[in-house]
Image (tube, rainbow, N blue to C red; front, side, top):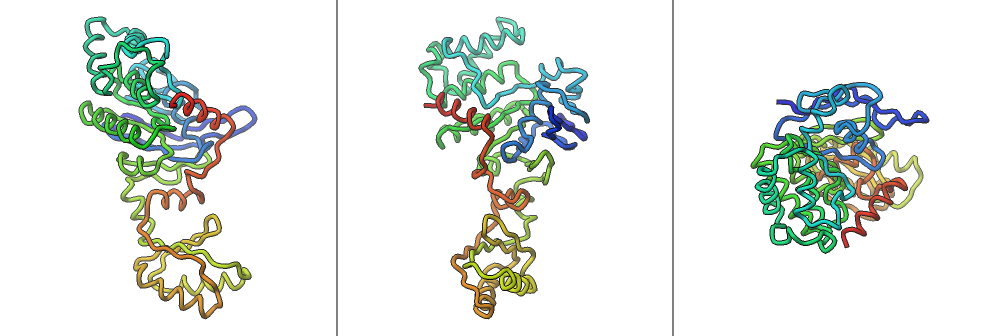
Length: 335
């Protein structure tokens, strides 16, 4: 069953800035769906349209069968949303934060107490429930923030960079909670993340978005396999463009070679039998008087998939001024 249906969705901001350019995709019930892309690619804008926070310029989006523009209230009651910025109130206790959130959704008091207790145990905060959040660590705050998004038992949970700025152990803990939530409640989870290993390990499917357009959408396994085989990455000492072109033309004619790409001054050869190809590459380099300064052979990763579709590494992307300010706020809260 499809719980999210997006059809030719677009958003144009004042000044003619196209943040999202007519994208279409579906998300199945119980699926963990990852949205990957550099800062400014349209990830957060898409999520804000799906959660009814902003209206699209054109196209449509349905969540749990409701149109996000025509029926925003049923959509809001069906979803949970955890943004990059923490929504917890430091002056309240963990229990009080959850209680206040539950009141927003008009959850009956007798149901609320049981549900708060379950959530605090789920995120391992039961022993700190009556302590003010100002004394919580960054990881504890984020776990409480996620629990607040679950208080009304949504069918779909939206997570915008849920582990940004957290240490590795805390990130792993949070993902174990999220996986457990999905397993126990058949909840659909739509997330954005900058951490490729997280997306690879936890997502059932991934969409790569760049410049407001979806470049690829599939399972992490298929995305990696579709690159075509082993990856040989090499750097060469600068020669004339003509010599370099002749060098790679000769390599391209070898039967094992499927593609050659250039990114950040390095060349990546996609090949079916990388271990057999490397000696041939060195032979051709010797013939063409090309000096290879480094060469590596590896199996494709999600990072490689991302580079193939966007031409750059996600972790090296420089965000906008507002993205950087948001990151600073999160890191300060996490200390």
